[in-house]
Length: 236
Ligand SMILES: [Fe+2]
Ligand SMILES: [Fe+2]
Image 1 (cartoon, rainbow, N blue to C red):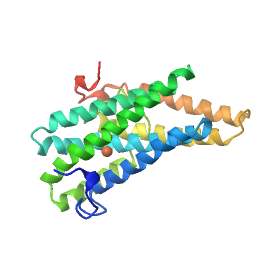
Image 2 (image 1 turned 180 degrees about the vertical axis):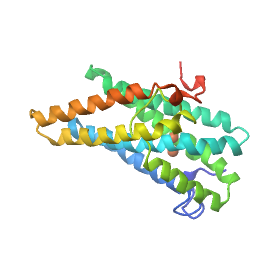
Image 3 (image 1 turned 180 degrees about the horizontal axis):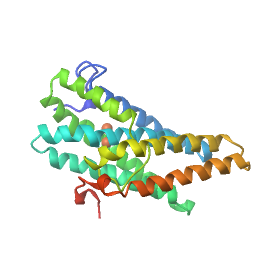
Image 4 (image 1 turned 90 degrees about the vertical axis):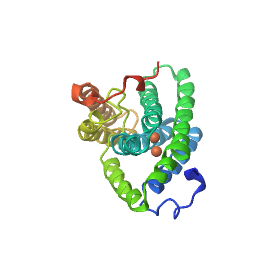
């Protein structure tokens, strides 16, 4: 079993294969993690938005589509995917904590932990889970899975939702409404950052974004969206 990191595109099933698509996103994630460490203020906030957009849609589509396949075809798929879902859950909780943070002193340790968990997640997927999946699926199946994952990823939520289930049916059901709210907030937040710091436009954009955040917070607690969760997904 060879890590995805040590295989070329052809071995991984070509550019449309799920393995190549995963690796491509992981490389982009690595770039954004570096940028996060070298920026500050509004610039860092923009990198953070891009990071969230990549990470949450990517992980949401893994949880809704890929891990159920892994549980079907791998004898130990349950244990491996649960470990990854725990990492995803921690990432969701860390980003929520960072967004709520009032004490700037507490920011760096949370950011450091976030970077650490994201790197762990990539290693678990590239070194363990995805090579195991590669052993079980042929190229045609890898490509088909690649297209399906891409379709889910493009319409998935772009923000943390620690309350919704990390598994179907809850996460699959919540995907569309949360995605609409998240993507609207991404536009509002970007518009706020582009307007003048003391202007009324900025505060209007920020207020609208907070209203949508409250709506998403209420929505994610609805019973159908928490269905399917394994209780031990949440680390103590
Ligand atoms: Fe991934
Ligand atoms: Fe992941």
